[in-house]
Length: 338
Image (tube, rainbow, N blue to C red; front, side, top):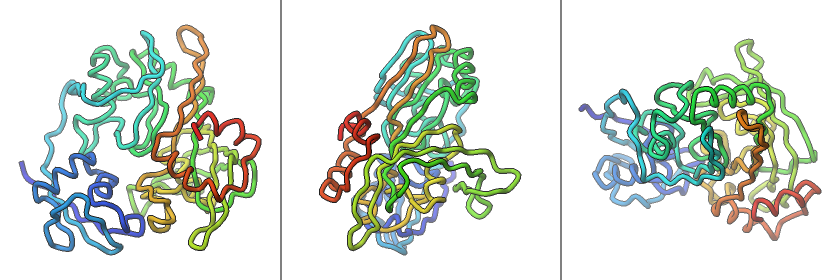
């Protein structure tokens, strides 16, 4: 099969980041372990020199070239992958709620053929026991989380349940709440962002806020949980809970950038160097709470998910600069494990 060359320019978000971490964060690139193998196989050059170590750190302006083996297009039934762990929080014969780890892609895409959540669901349930209304390559998927967003999401085991769950999302009664750390001081304790989102006309990998007639409605509300003082090299930080009323691609990340408070660690919409992003090479965004009425049994399913260790460590590093929690923060933060 012919190889494919990919050229990458290191921007501010990649300054000081390990090569394998930087590569895996780019759209169209494989998992971090696969990127490490590409380095070992001599398929990665840095400023025209072969890279010898996956842990080498990048500098602003560096140029990478990656030789990717071309993947055969996936056909037919997805291959099961039993080696991807599933952190299941609720399961019955109709659906499951699981906590997705950061770094896991939801369904096959260029560079991710058999290492996705969909492959893990096939291994756990069987291909024929998953809803496929979203397409044959997205069995069970009801809604997506970005690759480097962690937390709770729902999967369906048949078409009827999948449609019913999607209807709950469309009717805005499947309650999804996220926690994010953003740059800067967010003054209001509560706020609503109602700004349409469309794909960027200059960069097809990005979304943008626009009043273009083709933009899709996007509504995000936020509640401030905790604020952190500014330092010599930053403008401070604010911990928010965000509530999605719509589910547009990159919605929270785009809306936060729009109001001038980029998500910490966001490689696509963020700003600042690794220090200002508190050492994170992925966005500080976690789906922490989900609540809905089971479409078959009527049972209320309500689940909360603590922050993963990397995000808890970031908040721990800010503890001495805390300006105090809001009433909402006093209620929610202990449920996050912080």
